[in-house]
Amino acid sequence: MNDRLLSLLGICRRAGRLVIGADPVREAVDTGKAFLVLCASDISQNTEKKIRATVEAKGNAEYRIIKRTKDEISFSLGKTCAVLAIIDEGFAKKLLELVEAEQ
Image 1: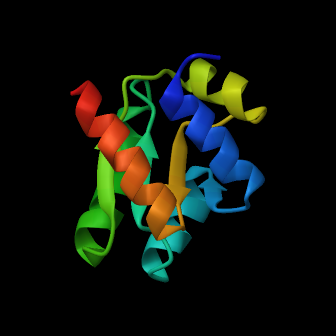
Image 2: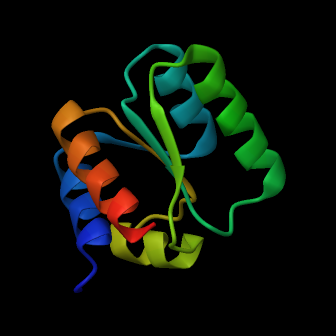
């Protein structure tokens, strides 16, 4: 796998610093644990709207849509997912750098 973003997400998951799924991510944002929220490029509009609203209401996490599909993310993590929250500040900063470098 040559995709640095997906590789780092895999490391983050193995370290236990990744929350996967819309409801767990919203809970992590609500409790202030999330530093960065990432959504797949092909996420449903309804889910994206709910996640974005939660992040904007709390204002404690960054929010980005990444240029990866649900299938690409799911394959790299070994679990079906379209919404992720990083609950470690160091991982969040590095992932945010990688996401912004792509855009």
